[in-house]
Length: 401
Image 1 (cartoon, rainbow, N blue to C red):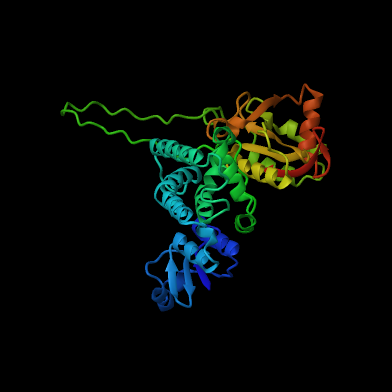
Image 2 (cartoon, rainbow, N blue to C red):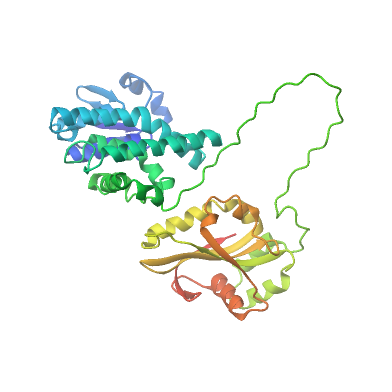
């Protein structure tokens, strides 16, 4: 059997591959390009232009839930429930996922990842509704491990996949603690060997990410015509960096100079101090405040750090930093030393606009008057992986430039 997909790890395609693996059915996964979608072969197979599509000897099937039911039936139907009641419950939860959970979860994920324009009020409402849906599930799971029957079914796979991105981004540890039945169920679903085979280890978030939403458009009521008043020139509201006086320190040129200097711990930092406009720039140490369970695995902690840095790329034009993961498993820390525009304040681009910065504690460094701060700057900007930096072994180091 051939499974035609656009993205083999999208939730709708992933569930088919998971159920196939659980049912012992082998699929030949074909990733479709635009040229094939225009071909006569594709148009002859599809009922409508959507994915996934399963091609069998008996014909073609579309819609992931229908394909999952077909694959489960080939394996004897155990994944569809062992009794008439369980089979009806599987249908019930699949329907609930498709009609209720997925549309709401999609709005929440769209706002988090910026896939489309979502107004803040609409996102807030979707987030509220999604949590209400999980409260329904929490009640239904009381005294049960799975949604229908004593073993995992198609329903568990489809519902868990529909919620996967939300568990990774917004349904945080605090919420899951209150939804203990859902939390245990989700952990069991994501630990299924077939689920891990397709999606890998699903790391549920400790703290929620903030959405990227557009402001609510206010309806302007038309007033009666009046004499036109002189137009006032709208002044752009400047953030704290844009409001600063000009600086003589060219950070772009300096980055090139520094990263190519052979003595980053010594002469490069000495020259840095001479060149720097100390009234227009400042050094800071950032330290991520871990939540329970974070910092235990290096690859997960690296992903946590990379996510923070990728969302900070917009401030690179007025920052220069070395950020990394330090320590040993299971007690890893995410920290960095940053040079930022401004003599006393963190740039608004980080403090107010970065969705994860609120989870960082920070302190201003004074390397000209405090030897320990000078040493810290030299260790961070001149150190290498496996060396001791700030009293901890450097596992991963990243430039922000």
